[in-house]
Length: 137
Image 1 (cartoon, helix red, strand yellow):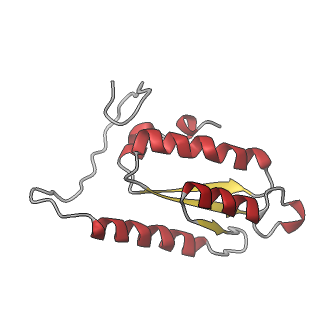
Image 2 (cartoon, rainbow, N blue to C red; image 1 turned 30 degrees about the vertical axis):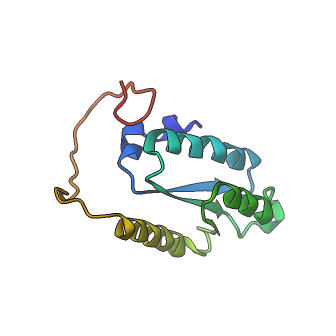
């Protein structure tokens, strides 16, 4: 599944953080991570926190992507990496808390704007045929 099939590019434009999850028992899932991160960079730019998460850590016998491979990839591109098991509820809350903390730290380190408005949410139905970055035609 392509990133743009799974997520609205307009939704990712306003994201503060993205958790990219792959299935440790599915090599294709891990292979897609690079494409997904490229799409995130394309639509959200550098101003979004990213976290790479390996899921199904409990299925050690079916594991096809080594932790070392995933950690090396995350280190190479400069994003944090965590192992989780949703089935066993291992590190699931920690992944969300780590993302929230990294967003909070990034936001606190940015200079405050004098004319900054609190973030708002607008919900409306809209057809999207956008092919490039945020706000592009």
